[in-house]
Length: 161
Image (cartoon, rainbow, N blue to C red; front, side, top):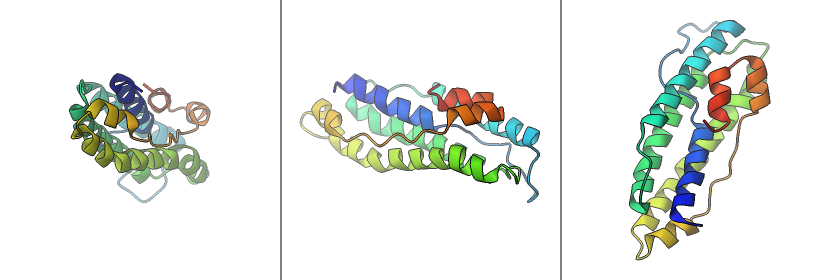
């Protein structure tokens, strides 16, 4: 797999995981209404999209690790903010199973592989070493569910941008 292809695969995984940003978390312990949850989640996803698009894509194997660190940082901020939202009680289980849970799993999988990319970038043949790094499994949210729930910005982002 070429170095450019590796970057694209990693970027796609980050984008699939990245739904979020800061802000919009509920301050009370009461569950949000569905409309408030959708509004706040979409605000988080809109912020995540902007944060990820603002990153400069890596152009060499040595750029990949730092790029993924920044991407995962944005994604972790997003997933943390989404998990802090107090989902409507009737939907909390489905939202966790089909939306925030898969996002959290994907971010963790990417975070776990970053040190391998960073080590590969220091190898005598960094392009080959980066290409040999096993890709993390892609755990995507149920985009049909997210869309049907009404979270347009989160659906777009979870679908890959």
